[in-house]
Structures are given as structure tokens and as C-alpha cells.
Length: 77
Image 1 (tube, one colour):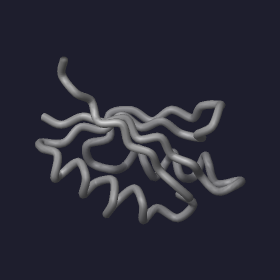
Image 2 (cartoon, helix red, strand yellow; image 1 turned 180 degrees about the vertical axis):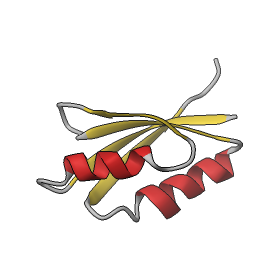
Image 3 (cartoon, helix red, strand yellow; image 1 turned 45 degrees about the vertical axis):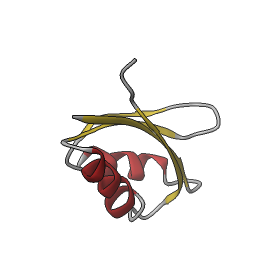
Image 4 (tube, helix red, strand yellow; image 1 turned 180 degrees about the horizontal axis):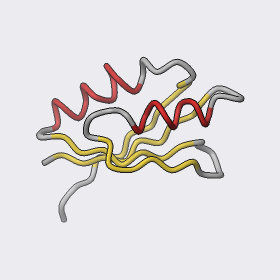
């Protein structure tokens, strides 16, 4: 199981709309609107790293209002 936190920057005035769209995506376990350098933090799970990457690139990046993302993949130590 691959997991990641995706930090999303949304266009001005689009945060609520983007957050609602993110909640609908398969593999998204939580969506939080936050303060600071990013607008939204998403916790994402997928069966493997390839599927996780596909979700970010093919789904999250294509949501209207998403300006940028920064993905932190969870690692076991």
C-alpha cells in the first residue's frame, strides 16, 4: 500500500470547490483546508506507487482550480 500527503495550492476563490472535488477521488482518505503556504492537504492511499502517482498526475492536477501540488510520499523507517 502506498500513501502520500498531497499539498495543494488552489486558485483564489476556488479552495472550497477544489476541496469538494478532491473528496470524490478514489483513494482520497481525507481532505483538509489549511492555513499556511498551501491551501489544502490531502491524504491519499493507493495499491502501489504507480497508482498513487497516476492519481496525482491524472486526477488531482486536472481539477479546475488546482494551481500546484507538492507530494510527500509516506516511507516506513
